[in-house]
Each structure stands twice: as C-alpha cells, then as structure tokens.
Image 1: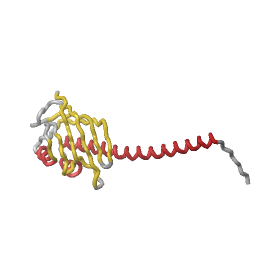
Image 2: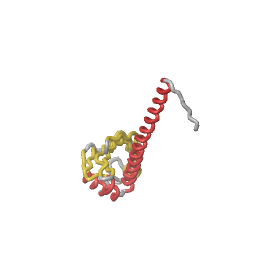
Image 3: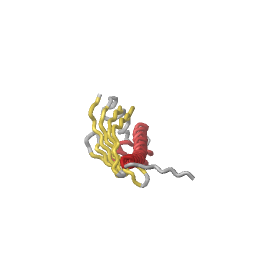
Length: 163
C-alpha cells in the first residue's frame, strides 16, 4: 500500500479555504438566480397571455385566470376602478384594441408579490377614446401568488402620448 503525505503550509490552507468558500457561494447564488428566473419567466408568460387575451377579447382567460376578483385599477382615464367595472367595460367593447404591444422593463419580486413595470402602445378602435390613434402609456401590474396561481391584484396605466 502506498501512502502519500502532502504537507500544506498556512498560505495553501488559506487558498483552499477561499476556493471552498467561493465554490459554495457560486452554487448557492446560482440556485437563487435559477429560482428567480423560473418565476420571472412565468410572469412574462402570464403578461403575454393577459395582453393577448385583451387584444382577442378572451374574457374567459381574463376573468377566470388572470384578473383577481379583488383587482383594483388606476385607469388611464385617471379614475380608480375595480375588476367589476373593468369587466363591464370589457363586455361593452370599451377595451377594444386593433393592436397592443407591451414592453416589460423590470420585474421585481417580494415574497409572493411580483411587480411588473414598463411601457405599452395600444391602438384603440370602435367607441373608445382615441380610436384610430396610437396611445403610448406607462404601466405597472402587481401580481400575487396564492393557491398555486399568479393573478393581477392591481394595475396602473398612465397615458403619456397620443399620436
């Protein structure tokens, strides 16, 4: 049997300790980043689903899956509304868009809350205000994770330009 003895001096031990600490830190942070990326990709998917459902007029997805029954909205008309008011507006054709683009600039998580901020461009049609024009606005959507689902609990949209 061959036994090899390695003698390490103090600086070697410090180097090994630093490498071990660095390895532990990298493994720990990569797991945290992966967990956040998974949540972020889910929120981005739901943001796309919400935008596309509004554009298509798909009330089933919006009412039953995306919008919380307790959602509140600070509307582009500078009025605080509820999900019931938004549903009524939606049913009457008041959320009728020819096009709807959303640019997410930031998603932040705080426990079971996701805050999404960015810009939107819509082209209203029909009996909506600014029908036929391109409306640029800033938005914030607040999502809450509850009962194994994400839903929008608050929304704010502010018109910044009409062309």
